[in-house]
Image 1 (tube, rainbow, N blue to C red):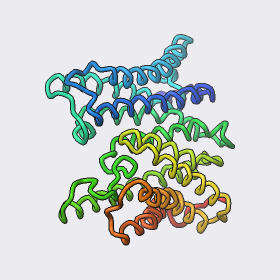
Image 2: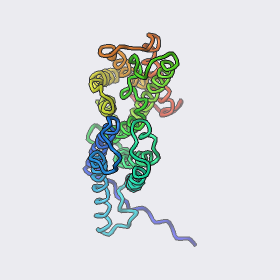
Image 3: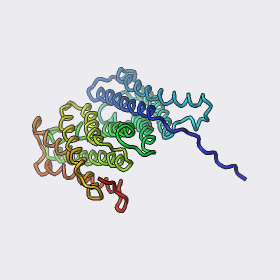
Image 4: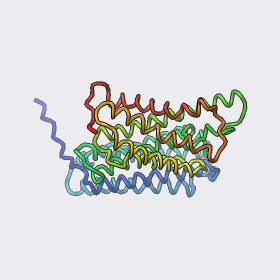
Length: 338
């Protein structure tokens, strides 16, 4: 007769530990964007050993040290290896190993093929392995923080910070069409000519669709898990924009993003509960920031998109948000109160 499976003795991660890892996850995202800025602005050479990589791998090492130190201390206290990993942090530990392996492979890749810039740097196989490891590393505070009922910022902060890091990773790896990194509506942004203009419009619209889908989905998931305190949606809108603009040169676009985040928060406070209020929230979370973004661009740049396209993008972003809400809250699923 087979022996009964041993019950897991894994202990929950403490709030202090999750807070620390979540903050370091955002610091790690800063390191990634600093290295990306260097790639995008021609500050790299053909060597793997650069100051920018030192920042990137240094911030990675901080996260790895805090997590692995906790595992080793728990193991030293007598726990089994499987129980030494805090509850919710298994993927984080695996992600640390994936990122380390990706970094070693990236060093070999750069030695053989040189250092990539712009789009090729984002789709390089070794960089995709690094991105996968980074996302896995960021799961710990989120999983640990959403497995128990939460109330307010004190308990929700790790999940919200992890969501911000995740949005920054996604925005970074898709910056080639992110509307905060690539100003597609600006005249001549991608050259001139009838075919070029039409292609840039198509890529630009696709970028707004992707931006709206990821932003609204993350906010809705936090809402469903009870980890969206007042101000969190606005912080995610502003914070993700602050990361994205670093890959271009239009840092001022954080201002309309911050105003949009504030307006979203004000609107959410007035929404009713039930299914209608939920769908309206899903519409407004992407639609309001995109509206402010499109309204602010003509203040600094000449707009090359026709008015129908320029004016149609914000409501389209809102409709994409509603579609995302159908995946997070399918028809018939319980909906939150106001």
